Image (cartoon, rainbow, N blue to C red; front, side, top):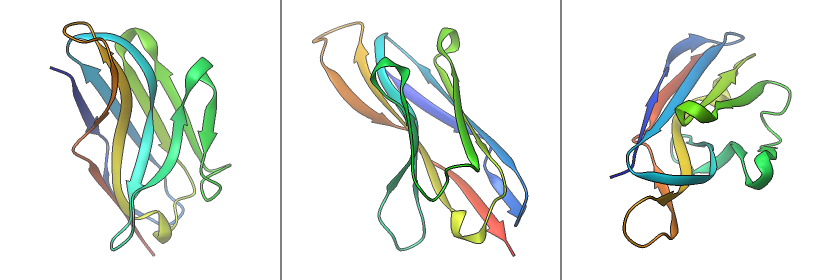
Length: 122
């Protein structure tokens, strides 16, 4: 019974900013990784930014210096601040988490949100 719910997508003009949030809920034992992926129209899903083991962060080269990932562990929530947006950033942004549930077999598996649309106009 784990769910990831994203919010904050929308339509913005180039150079603008947007903030995304994702909250994980349900029977969670631990969150091993949590972050963001995106899928531009007609392209494969790609990593944007994520917290990994030891809370180390990774960013796609295309967003370094423009996007910032942060989190609130007590709320099981991860955020993504998107600055200096470009039309190429247009995509469906998906929250991702690797979670071990508190019930049943305690094996880590990947969970995905339903996605939130970010559209950047020129």
